[in-house]
Image (cartoon, one colour):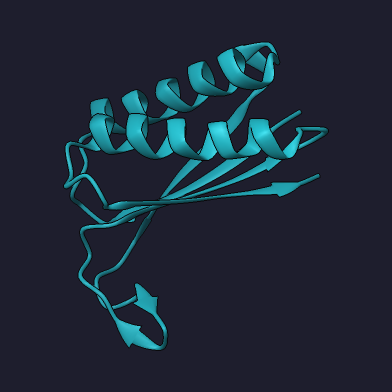
Length: 107
């Protein structure tokens, strides 16, 4: 079973946008990895401003962080999944194109 943890800025996304994010992740995972979308777990958590850092420096709170835990995916499928999730989640939250940072770890 795949699990995705999504961190978004607090009070920026409506519940409907969060649902769009979850749906985008489930669909992309299904289409690339092949798992049943109903078996994909997605948790969307809100993070306070002042809690997003890169290289030890505070960054603006207009980013989304997606971390997936996926079992048995080839390197090629992981790369395809990262690209797809980044594009689809960015579209779902309606942020700037480079606002979604996506990583995939093996289970």
